[in-house]
Image 1 (cartoon, rainbow, N blue to C red):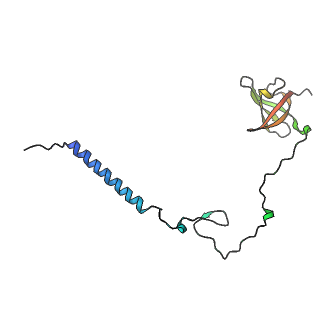
Image 2 (cartoon, rainbow, N blue to C red):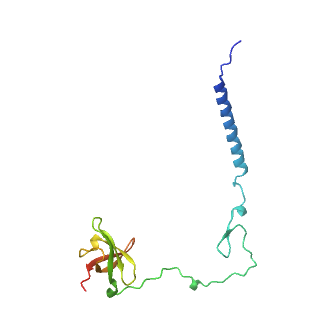
Image 3 (cartoon, one colour):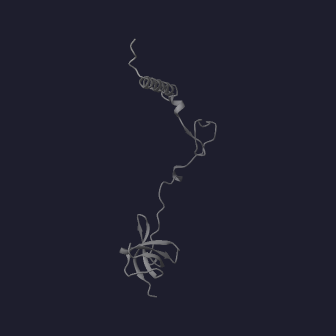
Length: 153
């Protein structure tokens, strides 16, 4: 009698392959059963209630709606008032300055705000704890100090 050409490991691999195929088919059927395709438009709609929350229930048509005048709606950014040149010059104290990297921070004496200063914005050499006068310039990352001079007063 001849022996079977299939070894034990071949049989096991074939069983695993068939099991994997069956699992894949089963998952495919489950996805089809729970699919959201083919649902009606009513099941896909979402509504916003009076508090701004998203809900699946439509609003109650018997509720009183608020009337808003078109003139009351404001779509704009409030304009900042231009500062006078005298207001642009500020005084402060250098809280940190790294000469090797070329940047530091100045604490504005008026607003107590920490303002970035770069080596390019210096007129005089500064060190930590120096009292300085400077102008504020708006940079993409926030306010920055320019024309930084030692305060001679």
